[in-house]
Image 1 (cartoon, helix red, strand yellow):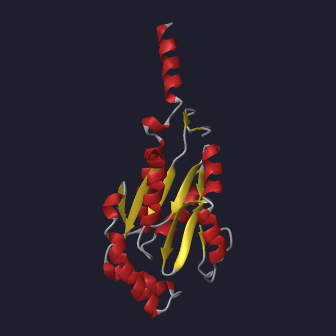
Image 2 (cartoon, one colour):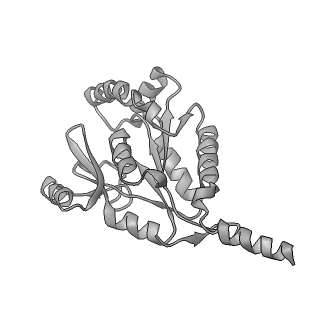
Image 3 (spheres, helix red, strand yellow):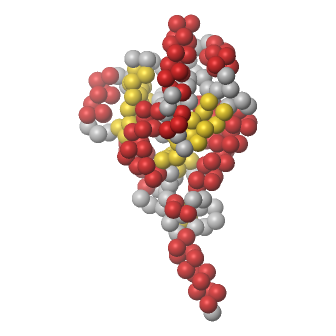
Length: 218
């Protein structure tokens, strides 16, 4: 993997930054804010077999493909992770992620617990995972109704699924309770900044310290 100089000039390797949450808990909003405000961060755009929703854009939100193409990508090893949610398939294309990492960029993943497990199995040292919690069940249901994109039946299904999704919270490195989006963003941003500074990721530190030692010894 190629490495890019960090803000302090010390080389480091990239990381895979994962955000997961029950539907409606705010991970998509937080992902958008991260992309707007955090430099050297690329978004991993998933492929999906579900229909495009109003306001979504091909290649920005998802790559919308049919089941035949999805199955071919899965069998061909073209997906880093995949999952089935509400009868639709989702997956992360391998090639663009590897291209971003090879250029030294961090990659943001907006995926569920199943995908996070698969990424962790493949590259545990490079994965940083954050689970976003709603402040209450009532707040989650209100957010789902406010989106007004799904029927009452679908919303009930999402509420039921949230119970199962929440059971995986302890598998994540960090937990953020989204009471206020600005506060939650500040916490997520702090996690990413701190993870970028971890000693084991800053591969250029050895050379930097040796040079300091050489200068001090003169």
